[in-house]
Length: 257
Image (cartoon, rainbow, N blue to C red; front, side, top):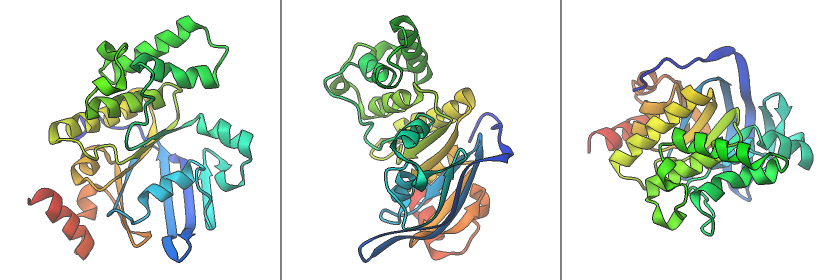
């Protein structure tokens, strides 16, 4: 559980999604999704593989267009944005890919500096290096600055991936399966890091996962997705008092094995 009380502003909605639909041919992935993320809040979107979780955050990030519905991020209607406005919005929204998405030919330090060089080319090297040091310290991996991604463990690559997303100081973080493929101890480290990012950088986050330990550790709110829509939303203990078969299956699989 969290060791701090998140500073959530329930009067300030940073993501608002209404009646969202998305299909790929005859595969109806999202079937009327509604969601609100408040400033400073972590929402966990929980569901089985193939239920539309990752499609949802790709739509939020403007990587996919919905078939119908509204997607408002930081006051902007994402599907209506042109390329320049969308690029500007993405500077405020950090997307943490499942595999870390590091460049194998760059050192850790170079990976972290890359978004700054691309998006803020006039930044002085001294300031850029300072930001790299700050982020490496935040993810607890200052000693890896000169290492190559191949020299890192899976958990370290995930943490560096989160760090590279943080380097631009986004207001919103989108995490896609942050604990997938990791051992229990490393999962705990990633969960603690997600909470530390929320506390230290004052981010608002959507966390996509099927890991209930991650959901319970990081989520201020849980939204359970089934067949392309949310069937239950609330605090962890509220959601898992439900008698819905899918919800009970999730709980039993994660906590009774």
